[in-house]
Image 1 (cartoon, rainbow, N blue to C red):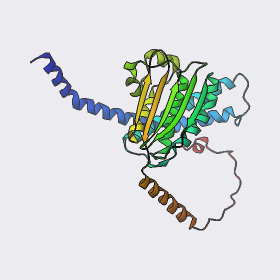
Image 2 (image 1 turned 120 degrees about the horizontal axis):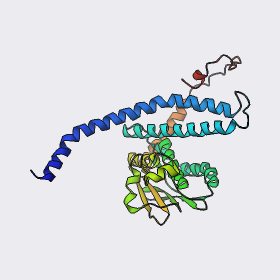
Image 3 (image 1 turned 90 degrees about the vertical axis):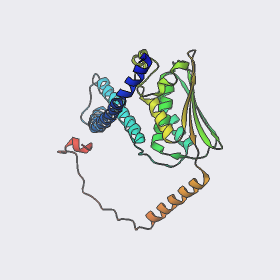
Image 4 (image 1 turned 135 degrees about the vertical axis):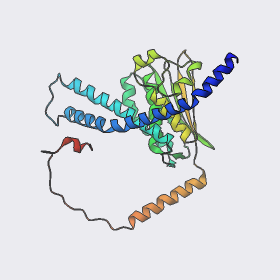
Length: 292
């Protein structure tokens, strides 16, 4: 038996074990994501109450610590939410409705302007009149957020991030260009895999788990699209999210369903408003107020 044959046979023998490990990993990630959601929400809720002075006025030396807690709790919540999105996509749990992608991208860019300015970058947006696509608006929004955040994170001060939306007869593209640190040709596929950045040093310098681009790829595939990467180590990167547009017959059918739902809702008489007695938060279990 040759060495090559032995290697092939060893791969075949561990196949079931690797599949079982993958399944256990998915179960573990799903359970951890689910269990973290509530405590992270409670921590963030209390921290925001402290920040806003609802539990008493903070001393000046206390405010930086509270703001750090709020920021880190928000980062942890984002990780949990993005992990949940990826798990949901893998399990086939997502919507498929007409989405105006240009509107989604415009909102994401506007919300990112403050972060870009704080990083010393210019952020520009250009959009053509594009047809709607079919998909999950929440998942698509998160994918665009990941692309814009990634461009801002890896572009040094003084750089530029350009976000464009353009359409073709059968597809719609979101293109995010930056003047950042660049990507080597041998690293383009690697960074689209889960929990990966260009190298270990990047993780420490820029932070993050490399989860954002993996989510983009996952959402793109679930919507029948692709994510393309261009760049080089001399600087600058370009990410293109390409998604199929909604066929005209599907769009018309979706519009009719929306109209039918609105007519169904309007057919019911309005429920009279009931004035409830005033209640305070004194004596309330704060854990219950955050859904625990």
